[in-house]
Image 1 (cartoon, one colour):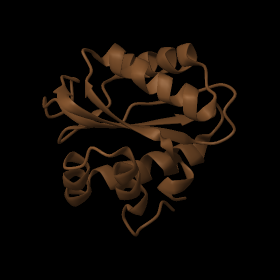
Image 2 (tube, helix red, strand yellow):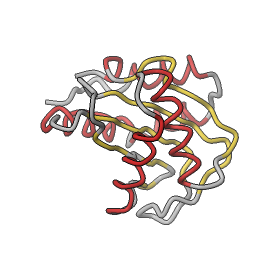
Image 3 (cartoon, helix red, strand yellow):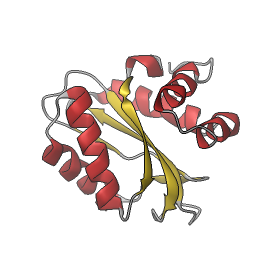
Image 4 (cartoon, one colour):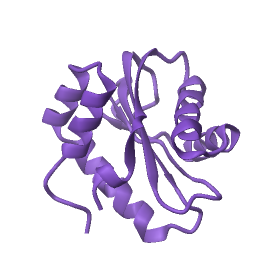
Length: 154
């Protein structure tokens, strides 16, 4: 599995700022609706439901919100770089500015986990995060993300 199979160029955006998690999830839902034909409301509701189980801010300014969505046939993703970091209840209590969201089919057991592991590994790479933070062109952000680490999910 490679990030290029999960993340379309149209699913990468730069946002000035999000005023709340809910507003960020709305932005992610709009991206998922436009790029993958998903229901905006289904995406926002699923992200909010998952986030209620525990925050998906993993530290170092990175959040990995994810949800299972009925009607999907494969794992897909959306990426947003925020110009103004957002308080996100992250494990290190730092605001987030890099948000990679995954959407998986309801029954996507191992594929969802492989994708989450791949995204997590990519977003833990300080060099990749630094490049993402220093670029504001969505196509450059997509290229950085899809070049990603050489190692792949098992």
